[in-house]
Image (cartoon, rainbow, N blue to C red):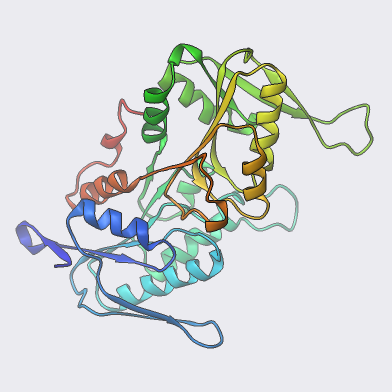
Length: 325
């Protein structure tokens, strides 16, 4: 059975694109529903065809698709699926995007640049999305780009609880890998009751064309350092920050991030790093080439399912995190 019926014959239907079916199945299991059977295939020239195998008329539809590589393909598939739901007379369309692509381009740094995060929101709205459910956006302001409700979920409770149960809090120091992530690190420090340190990057005045040196602001000597970020892409910034912490006497370094993008040279950098553990959520599938013993992946399916249930039952998604994050 693919729908939940409640008073007034409301019906919840869950749909999944092809980007990260494992997460969709976990969410479906948490909700106690099935994923609506869908035919999706690629034409020879790369165009995507989608058709749902059940009627969606009058249903509250939830479509989950995380923007993993190849990112442009999966974004396009998601837009096509939204359009198909709209044309099939869905009552409402809530789009679940655990990792929101293009969120890093949230403002113009220089002239003649796009604001790609806003373009993404416009495309989702034009396709027919009524609501977005996403997680740990790279910049909070991206929520304001979508002309409709945005439910912003947080992985902090799941990640921090894991660390708290495995490490002596008295030994912990939370570390921001750069100045731009201080607000995120500050939330972590509050939750764990730990001091905060920052890895500050600046240009080396003694070496021409040397981009940065890393200075640690805060006491990390003989401490277990928790480097926190919203995403790890190629791993360059986080591994350089870890090296700086070890150079300043850190006893151990663990890395916690919501989104393990892990593209390009990330596999080699993580493998060769002295970091003892990298902790991610399953907002994105872990690339097979980055299958390392020191990577831990925590499931966000229960959190996403609870958010879906609150939306469907006209409850409060915010209440999931009050007093928790």
